[in-house]
Image (tube, rainbow, N blue to C red; front, side, top):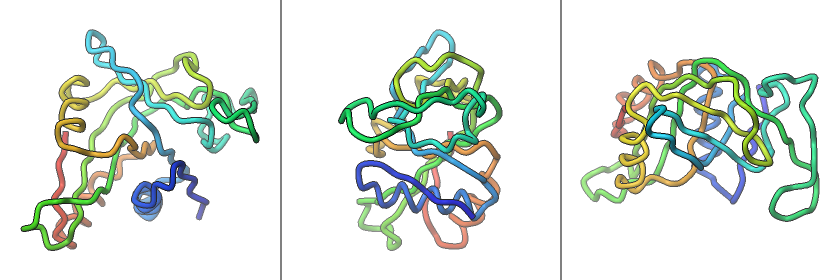
Length: 172
């Protein structure tokens, strides 16, 4: 349906985006966890500006600017929309007993209306599990720094896919 856009040659990030799309997500976005406010159970998810304008909090007011790091080309510069979100990632698994060579991690949250704290695109997300525990699990679990955020609950399809393909799934 759409066109996935990943940064930094993240092939499994692109695959994750395509899986989300195949499970009913319209536009989704590849993000980094860039800020944790444990006292508010809040994460800020960001990337450099490749989000679809339809994901903007206010598409009519979405702006474009020069890329934040490279100072070349054009990148979006707007906060991402509010609403329930799924955060999902397919990753390589180094466990030799896992014949698929893959693993998945998924969580839910609520993207809230907030200013764009960084140049590019930011979603401010209150997580369903404890935000600090989620970040700790991702870091200590050795997951990549990119997650995919979708504004639809794709967890039922992810669970079914993981079971069908025998891919280990971690849910927070």
